Length: 326
Image 1 (cartoon, rainbow, N blue to C red):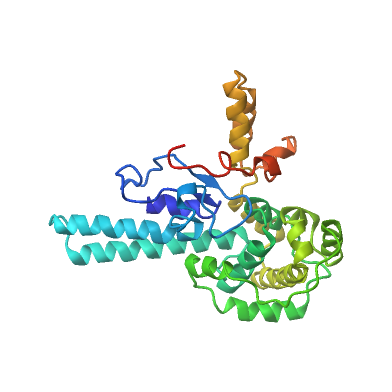
Image 2: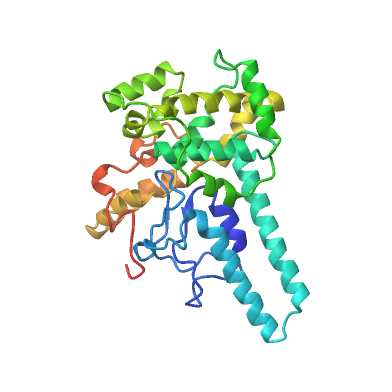
């Protein structure tokens, strides 16, 4: 399960029921089992859980998944040790190796999602903080970044110097990144803008690419316009880091596209397919499966709904969140 988890975190998947109360929630073989209230994040929220019964404590939410699996592995180790099936030193070494491999894999995947050859803790933490504040779509934000050219008029020498200090902290864990993203930003509050449309116009004027703007919540940008400059500043620093590493543009973009799927089985898309199938129409399921067979391809011919955030009427219990007994 630890192996599976280190692959889940990148695409924003949440299992929902990582407890050890039942024997079917984790597999020593690393298999994905007990498909219950699972889901992929739409808007980034470190505390996201698709499990309604976990709302109060959010023990198994996105940011807590690594610790939950670690705790479960400790319980397995304790059981094996009590049965004299493993030595204490062996168990401790295995648990330490789990943590090292989990964070190494996660950090590597996050670096690839930003087109970087090395993990940059500060840069990723700042990005996740902006995403949380902007209610950014997890999937579409990273996909948008994969299409942004490195060199343009907004890049400057000051961004490179800022990124150099950022690059000095490259070895942090996913836990610290997600915990920091769960805190409020320190940016000074600015008066709200007149409308979401005004916020979008301000974001365009600040140099944010349209595809990135589309991944953000216009309402959040309207209420917290300081986020717009925050994004513009982050993009400058990120481009400075890319320039420092010097990876060819095409290779960098390909790395990001290969690490950031455009299409994931969002809950509302599954619901569309379920409702149609219940009515005897399997064509929606067939179309969805066809798109998901090539999740990392751009597929311009695909209906836009397959890469879009859920419409308001689909953000409700029974679709985006379920109970353990659903």
